[in-house]
Length: 359
Image (tube, rainbow, N blue to C red; front, side, top):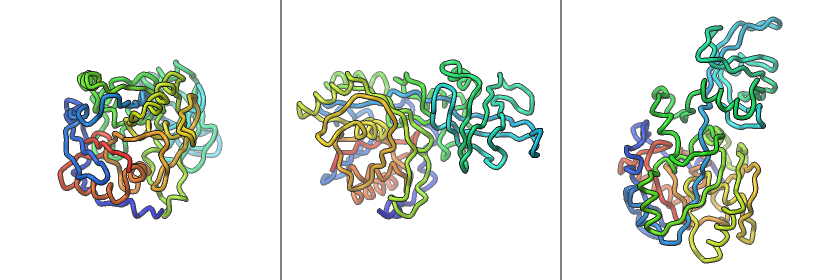
C-alpha cells in the first residue's frame, strides 16, 4: 500500500511531553467500526469491557538504554577524541547489543568507547565496549561485562530512552525513570516502553478484577526500531526490526481456553498484539515459546488472535498507525484521529489512549 495513505497533519501542541497524573486520568477514545466514536476517560475502561474478557499485558522492563560516552583518539588511522551517543535497540546475547550511534562518522569497527566517561573524567564509573560491526548508522557493541552485571552497569550510566519526539523538546529527568515504566514491569530488556500500559494503576487493576476481566502477561522486548519512520513509498519496501518475545505454556493455555470459550482477547498495546499474532497459527491456536518476530501488520492482514486493542495515538506514516488501520479500518482510523486532534487528545508515548475493536 502507498505510505502516504497513512499520513496526517498533527499540531505540535498535541504531542504530550508528560503523562497524565494520576496515570489513569488520561482520556480514552473508543473506536468500534460501524458505531459512533465514544469519548471516555481511561478510568472508564472496566465499563467498556465484559466479564470474561482477557487483557494481555507486556511485562517487559525498560532499560536506561541511552548511553553517552567517549572514544579516545586513535593510535593509527587518525581520528581525534570524540563524544559518542548510542541508543541500544537489540540484545544479541549476554554481552552484545545492536545500537544506533551518533555521530556515526566518528565511529568505526575496532574503536573502544567508554560510556559514563567524558574525555577521561569518570562520570559515575565507565562502562567499556568494543565496536565489532557497523552498518550505516548502526553498530554492534561487545561490552566488557555480561548478563546481570552488564544490566546493572547500563542502569548506572544510562538514561531513559525517551522517544525522539519528546527528547528533542526537553531533557530526560528523574521523573522519567518512574513515568516511562509500567507498574508491573519485571523482565529487563526493552529500550522503549509498552506505552499503552503506562496508564494502568493498582486501582485500575482492582476495578478490572471486580468487573471479572482477566489478565495474562507475556514478554516482548521493545526495540528502538519501533520509532523508525517508513522511508519507502510503499509498505512492501519497509523492513521491520526484529524483537524478542517469550510466551509461557501457562499463558498460551489460558488464551487458548479463552478462544475456546468464545470470550474476547484484548491486547494492551501493539507489542502484545504483535506477539499474539506471531504465535497464533492458521487455525487460531496460540503456541508457547520464545524467539524473534518482525511481523509487519498493514491493512489486509487477517487477524488470528485478538478481538480488540488498547493503544496510544501514533505517529503519521508509522508502522503502528498502519497496524491500527489494519485492525479497525483505514477510513475509520483517519476519522478517529481527526476527531482526536479536533478534541484536544494528547498524542504519542505520554499521551491519551484509544480502545479499538476489530472491524
